[in-house]
Image 1 (cartoon, rainbow over the protein chains, first blue to last red):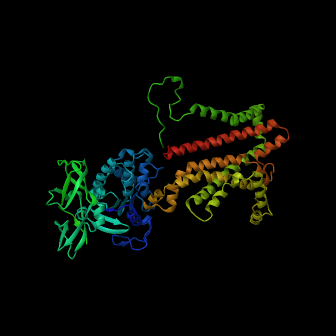
Image 2: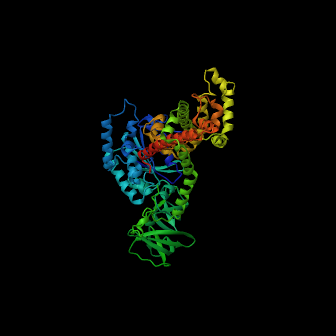
Image 3: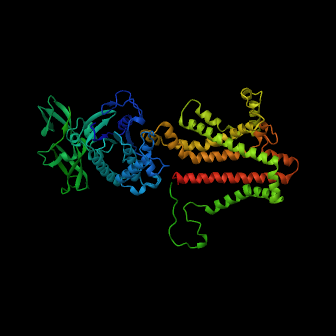
Length: 319
Length: 292
C-alpha cells in the first residue's frame, strides 16, 4: 500500500475483504501477521489510537446527533489537551460540509436524509479526524445504481483533491476498476493479485482473477511448441515455455469473431442475441460443448439457428 | 417508519367526517368504539365514581384530609420512596437488561425468566419472603444490622419491596432497545477515538433514554400502588413507615369511606401529574433524538 493511493480490495463474497479491512482498522485481530502503518507496527495499537477513518456500508451514523455533531464527534472525543477549540471544530465541520456539498444540513438529523446524503456524512465524519488511512467497507453497497455512480465519481474527486490514502472494499469489479489506482484481488483469504486496473485486466495471474473481472469463455485447447491450438488450428496466443498438452484457453466475449468455416476455431449455431448499449451479445450453442457469448458490433444481424464459425483473436492460457 | 397510506386527494364527499381518513385497513369505527367503551367502563367509570365519592367532601374537605399530618406523612413516604425505588430499579434494571441482551452465558435464559417472577408472584408472598429475609434475625437483615442498617420495619424496607416489584418493568422496557443497538455504531465511535466510557455515554445510552423513562414511569406507578408486599416488611409505623394505600385500608375499616376516597383522589392526582410530566419529558427527548 502506497501513501496517497486509492486501493480497491476486490473479491467474491466470503473472500475475506471485509475481515482484512476490519483487521486494518483494529476491529478484528489477526491470527498471524502484522499491520504496519508507515513503518510503525500497529498490530497491537488499540482501535481508538490507530487514527483510521472507517465508513460502513450501512453508514452507522449516530441517530440522536445532528449532522454537525456527527461530523464533529471524533474531534470532540479527543482528550482536552488535544481537542481543537470550539470555533476551530465549527470551522472544520463547515469545511467538511462544503466538501460533501451538504452545507445547509448541519442541524438536520440523519433520519431526515437520503441514503446517499447519509453516506457522504459518514465519509465527512471519518475524514474529520484526519486519519492516516481511510477505510471504506462497500461504501456504495446500500445505494441505488444512479446514486452509486454519482458518489463514485465524487469519491474519486475528493481523493484527487485531498490525497487521502484510502482502501475500499467492493465486490463490484466496475467500481474497483473505475475508481482505484490499484486493485487487490482476494479469494478465500488469499491475495491473488495486486496491480493497476490495466495490469490486472491485461495480465491476470490466474483464471480466478480473470473470471472475477468479467465474463469469460472457456475453450479446450492444446499447447504445443509454444503455440496454442484449438480444434487443430493455431491461435494468436503463445503458450508459456514448457507447457504442452491439453490446456484451458480463456477469452473475453469480444475476443471471438465471426469467421468463415475454413478459418474458424469453433462452430455452432446462434441461439439468441440481444443488444445493450450499442453492442450486440450473441449466444452461440456449440456441439458437445458449453454455450459461448460473443460480443459484436450492433450492425451484424444474425438469425436464430444460423450456423456460424468463430475465430479466437485473443485470450489467455495459464500454466 | 413506514408512512401511513395517504388518502387520495379527492374532495371529501361528506366533509363532516373529515377526521376519518380513507384507509385500506378496515374496522376503524369498530375498533375506536370498542376502545372507547373499554376505556370508559373499565378505567374511567370507577375513577369517576371515586372522584364523585370524594367530591362529597368538597375541595376544602379534601384539602383538610391532605394536610392532616398522618396523611401528609403517608403520602410523602409513598411518593418519595416510590420515586427513589423507581430510580434504583431503572438503573439496576438497565444493567440487568444490558447483561441479559448483550452477553451470552450459561443460564442466560433462566436468568431472563427469573426477571419476570415479581410479576407473577402474589405480592403477599413476596412481602413475607422479603420480611423474613430482611428482619433483624433474617439472612440479610442480620448482616445489615451488623453495619447498623435496619431494613425491615423502616422506610428502607418499603424501598426494598418497591425495587423488587418495579425491577421487571425497568428491565422489560429497555431490553428490546438494547437488542436493537447497532454494533457498527459502537465500532464507529471507537474508530473515531472515543473511549469505552465515552461511547457508552454519548452513543449507546442517549437512544435508550425514552425507554428508560417508560420503565421508570411504570416502576414508579407500580410502587405507588403497591400494597401487599409492602405492609409485611414496612412495620407500618404512623409518621414513619406507613404508606398511603395502607391508610386508605385503615380508613375503610373504620367505615370512613369519604376519607378513604379523599386520599385516593389525592394519590390519583399526584400520580397523574407525575406520569404526565414523565410523558412530556419522553416526548421531548424523542423529538430531540430525531425519532419519528
